[in-house]
Amino acid sequence: MIVPEVVVFVLLGLLGGFTFILVEVAKKWDDLVTFFAFRRYALGAIVGYIYHIGYSTWTLPNSVMCFVSSYMGVHFINALV
Image: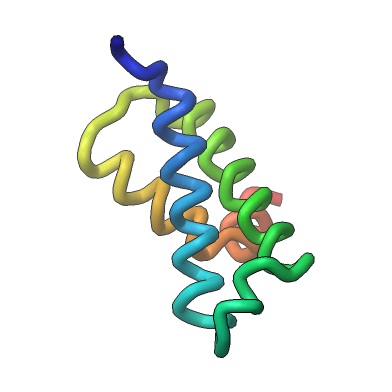
């Protein structure tokens, strides 16, 4: 079964948001389940979806940039606006 590209981009966005929380914010494991963390996970998934709309082919550069864009989530959204 082939996973639709939009799902791949959304999962990469979610992974980017999780990585941001894990690297930059979390000092203990409980920080991974706070409201701020879930907001960042959702924002990462949204950025992944937005990236899919803009660049709809799944290639290595696009997948890496989707991850990086969702890692930088808020800055990516502000750059679009």
